[in-house]
Image (tube, rainbow, N blue to C red; front, side, top):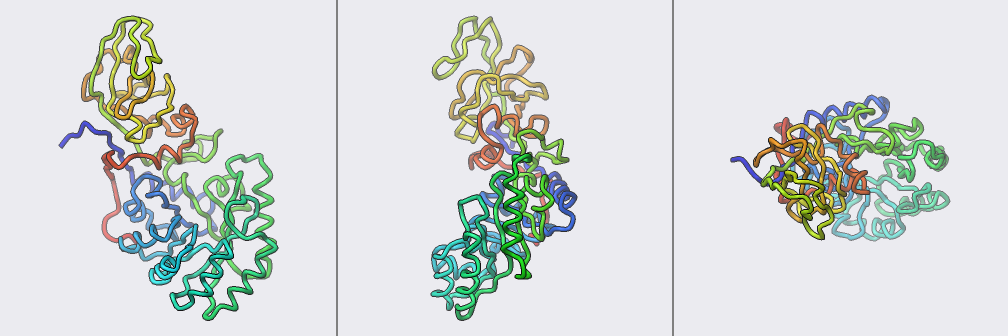
Amino acid sequence: MTWSAPCARIDHAALRENLAAVRRFAPASRVWAVVKANGYGHGLEAVAATLADADGLAVARVEEGVRLRRAGVTKPILVLEGMIFAEELAAAAREDLAVAVHSWDQVRLLAEGAGLGAPPCWIKVDTGMHRLGFAPAEVDAVFEALAASAPGPRVVGLLTHLANADEPGDTTSAGQCATLHAVAAGRGLPLSIGNSAGLIALPAARGDWVRPGIMLYGASPFATRTAADLGLRPVMTLQARLIAVQRLPRGAALGYGGTYVCPEHMPVGIVGIGYGDGYPRHAPTGTPVLLNGVRVALLGRVSMDMIHVDLRSQPQAAVGDVATLWGVGLPVEEIAARAGTIPYELLCHVAQRVHMEHEGAAAGGTG
């Protein structure tokens, strides 16, 4: 059946190639492939299956890790936010999910809930992000408290998160790496530092494990470098159909608020996608849309289900023609910049009502 509704086409061959690019940037590191937020909007279970060659998968929440185990994933899984409730601790232990331990509340939970199980733990150190993690001066006390638990949880590594890695000239990241290495001295534990931007731009962030996210999905973590510059391919191509063509007179005001007024008699297309599907409501007039392989401009305000596009360069356009909102031929970074946001938000906000077609998805088990 041919659908008039929007469709997100997920290119799993591109996903595999982007994982290979991670290996080229950090050849000596093991890879936690970050699949949180429903695989950055690409489909958690399908993405996990395709990323079977990663050394492990990283999620934000215990619930996501449990979903992966239910889907048959057997490889290591790291829960980046750890757990705050006893039920989550029990689930993490039962499903063999490694958890980030970043607060004294979690340390107490591990001590008081010893009978619930002891998942492997990565101690998170706050080296400058000031979001989650222990201050460097607290880490010795954390180890002592965990060792005093009976049975004590197994600490398997140290990690931190870079605050400014997407700004290559910023010295903060180098300082964060140095801080974690100082904390780790003499402990003999693996380290995990680099996110996508860090592992690309900063050799010191590569360490034992890297945690790529956005680059796996074919978008650049940098404002000044494109995905193509980095050898990455877009994984998601978001498309919709032209559902109407209007031939409007000079002076016609388009859509809510009439913010665009036709400067001449002109053809205007209506594409069946809007903010209800995850297209950014604040995308301004002039934001590019790819129609039949040719760029046309968004006109006026984005509606819940529709947008207007300028067809003066495409007078032959007809109902049913395919419009690409981002993906192959139209980088998601460009649309994000026009809308005043970041690629992460656009990819993660694609709505459930958008059809998702997986091309070249992995067959069989999920590793």
